[in-house]
Amino acid sequence: MHPVPCRVRSVVRELEDTFTLDIEPPESDWGFAPGQFTMLYAFGVGEVPISISGDPNDPSRLVQTIRAVGPVTDALTSVSPGDSVGVRGPYGSAWPTGVAEGGDLLIVTGGIGLAPLRPAIFEILEHRDRYGNVTLMYGARSPSELLFADELQEWRGRFDLDVLITVDHGDQVWRGPVGVVTSLINRASFDPESAVAFVCGPEIMMRFTIQDLERKGITDDRLYVSMERNMKCGIGLCGHCQLGRHFVCKDGPILSCAAMSDTFWTREV
Amino acid sequence: MSEVFDLIVEHPFFAGMTHDQIRIVAETGALVSYHEGQTIFTEGTSALGPLLILDGDVALEMQTPGHGPQVILTLHSGDFLGWSWLYPPYRWTYDAHVHSDTEGIWFDGPKLKNASEVDPALGYELMKRFTEMLVNRMQSIRIQLLDVYSTPR
Image (cartoon, rainbow over all chains, first blue to last red; front, side, top):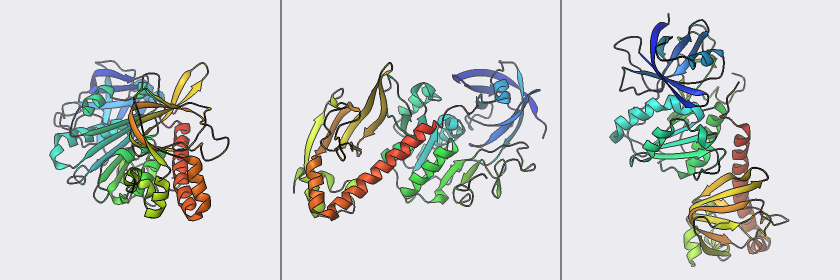
């Protein structure tokens, strides 16, 4: 339960308010599953849950992408190489990459939601032959706010991954799609009878995406979302992150829509 | 049957319509193609009918004084472009520019509406489909207006 001080190796500014920290893991045999998070502690300021955005096949690096949205994340994104942050975890459930094997896979994400899905993408690309068509659909606010832009470009160059990107607001040089991320679903090639979808982004974006995917014929037991609530302990004790009958920190953050059918559409839970 | 009929009979937009109904719609259509960079129409000009994009990408732009042209939406293969032909004053409310070579079918709006008046069952089928398209676009615009990716401070 105690945060382990870990040294920050490097800090990369991804966007105006978003940074990626490369941190020395707490232990030599440290590892994580795609979708899991850690509780990161900015000493003297506070602790927040942050999804791991690195490659699960490289356990020597704990990579976390953080958007500065408050005092703790402001402090975490102000660190320099050589500074220490406190780490607890990894915690939570993982993207069910095994469940998706043998069929088509849709990855739908928006904004900083790409960060929690990035480890799953690494994992899937590492075992690409186990999947049918894999389509990444990513929406951002504007071309200048595309997260991991270089990596997206690299993935677009692959023949075994369809990468569809859209922005809500274009600019003078953007020649790609303009519109919400759900508009990309019509352009993806998948068999709705067997396809699995991983969805991560702002909750309202996930709700609209789920509706569209269900309309396309994907049942809720094959739709997975990454939920976010106010986490404190990270291990299902304090109850701060309760979402209906689930604790997001322990049962989630990755939950199937079937498991959440009683809460996903309920207000104020 | 015509080439237009063959191109639209399997299109999801027309799924559920009878072949006779699709044939009537096809008779109002004409194949067109546009090159990248070409302007299909501009704001304020007469809206004579919808364009079904068979292949290619089209950007809808609005001219905003002081900010230049702003792309508000892009449409792609399988999408219908335009509904200003449905209601007065029958004028486009944005510019449509071709982002990549585009092929499509222009349908004659007045003829479609006339056919719908003569055959209300056909009109209802068309209205259901265009209304669904409108609702989906409105839904998308609502999400865009929410600016869901902005930083929650």
